[in-house]
Every structure is written in C-alpha cells, then in structure tokens.
Length: 173
Image (cartoon, rainbow, N blue to C red):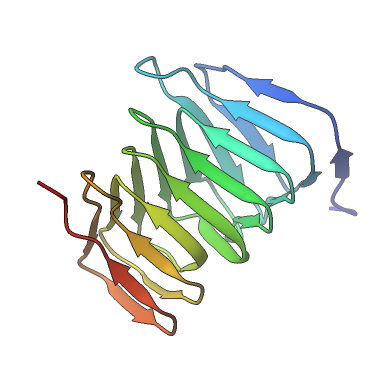
C-alpha cells in the first residue's frame, strides 16, 4: 500500500511498445504531444490496473492501441486535450473508463471501440467508426458525424445519452 506515484510530463512522447505497458496504481499527467502505436502495425497495448489514471491535456495521437483493465479498482483515461485517431488507426478501451467531457475526440477514418465500461465524450468529430459494444455513456459536447464525401458511423449496442447537438452529414456524391 501507500501513496500512488504521480508522473507529470510536458515534452513529446512516442510509445511504440508491442508488449503490454503496465500502469499499476499510478497517475500520469501529460501535456504536450504523445504519439502511440504504428499505423497498420502491431497494437501498442496498455494494461491499466488498481485505479491507474492517465490525464491528457495535450494532443494524444493513437495510431494503433488498446487500453485494457487489469486487476483492482477501475482505471481511467481522462482527456481534457485533443485525442486523435488518424485514418487507418484504431483504439480500444476495454473495461477502462474514458472521460473527455472537457476535451475533444477526432476520429479521421479510424476506429474507436469501447467495451464494457462507462464513457463520457465531449466534442467529437468522426469520419470513421465509433463502436460502443457494451457500457453506458454520455456525449456532452457537439458531435459532428461525417464530413463531405466521408461518412461517419456511430454504432451503439450499450446505452448512450446525447445531451448535445448531433450533426449527421451525409456523403456528397
């Protein structure tokens, strides 16, 4: 037992791990830029457990990553900055709470997959796919789904509450 360590970083990070990065009972406060994973490459897995927390206030670009809950108290990824999934990118939150009521998610033809836990999205721009396979969540910011010739897809089999504006843009042909 004891006090959970706190890591505060403001420089650029590049996470290209292909073996699981274990965050155990730690809080990471990250500003600046973070790039995680390799497009079309192996996933950059992160196991979060015992209440681990990531607080992003910078720009976090996820090319290919998974955040999975390990043992103990539920872990959380808080986004108060900008969270980007580029074209061809993928991110999965598996039983890890995802909070972004103050931040923005930009999904550029990639995939955001949320499974089995609570989520909270602020402003969302989506030209890819957002999948909520189980869990309960809220969209609190403006949601722009699609752009010009690029449609977006939001697929929810859990529960979603939209307390925001939802603009669904059909593709221009």
